Image (cartoon, rainbow, N blue to C red; front, side, top):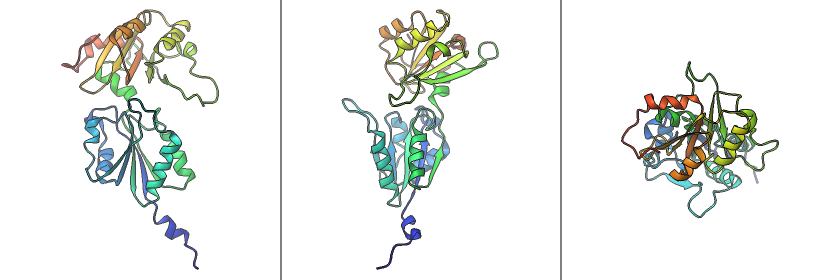
Length: 264
């Protein structure tokens, strides 16, 4: 009995595209990302991919949801890796569709490592990150010659399996002009305490932008001293981006997106 050659085995393997879908607005999906959605055989997507973008996927395309839904836990990363590998080894063109940019708190690096280890061809298609797009839609530039020359983008939800220290909020407090926090709503109170303890002035402006770049966008403005209470009264919910710094003041002049839900 003849052994299968490596060439014949590898011929069955397709390709995986790790695609960033952007922050929600269909217009912020890249042309390359849209092209891949139209041409791929399988789309494996997360919770933060907007409905407007999902509607661009042809009805004949296989769609697999691996995000978190009401009353259910998110699919474990190992299981997602297995799903990707299963589909691509059948010779399919697979899009792993992620909110924002896959390499900015999107676990794209982990999934790319898994593909590399399995000798599966892949390509990274960057997306517009919510870290920059959401503040922009709220009229908040992250840098400005008169207000901010440095920015830090930080996750407010770290992996418990991570080696080493968690985010040093006290150290970060005065290290940069603008602090952008993703996935930080559930930890807002402890984050604000750490930044305040680190010496950031209590009247530093803060903005929390919910559902940024979509028709449901809502902005809550406050200061370090009162943002937790304001967020509680406004019943702020994720997904939301938190911005801390003097650039938040510019919203009064630069808030260009009108006619949306009320502002707190």
